[in-house]
Length: 187
Image: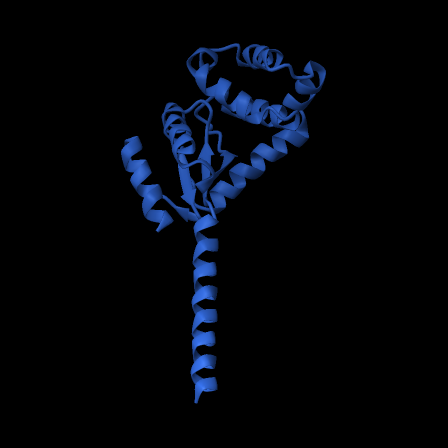
C-alpha cells in the first residue's frame, strides 16, 4: 500500500514538473513578428517607430523579421529595399533601415541613389561592394522574393504585420494599442 501511494506521489510530482517545464519553455519562446514594409511608405515609417518602442519595452520577448514589399506607386521603394539588402550583406541592415526611414522625405523627392550611397559611406560600408550589390540581380531577387512571399500570404498594402504567422487584420493606431495586441498574443 505504501509503495502504491509513493508511486502515485512520484508520478504526480513528475507530471507536475513536466507540465511546469513545458509552460516555462513556451514562456521563453519570443513572439515572432514579421513586418512587410515599403521604405517610401509614410505609414511604414510611423509603425516602424511603434515597433522600435515595442522592441525597447519587450526586449527578447519579441523577434522581428523585416520583409520588403515595395509598392509600384513609390518610385524609389525598390531601390531603397535594395540599399537595405546591400547593407545587410555587410552587417549594417538595421543601421541602413533606420537611415532610410529617417531620410524618407528627402530621398522620396529625388536623387535617391546618391542619398543611399551617402548613407552607405556614413555607415562605413565598402563602397565598391555596396554599389555593385545595389544594382545586382542577386539583391533584386531577394527583394522580389520577399514581395512574392507577401503576395502568397495575402499582403496587399504596407505595412502588413504577422504575429506568430497570423496576419494582423486591424492594426492598432497607437503604441498602447500595439502593446496590448502583443501582450494578448503572449498569453
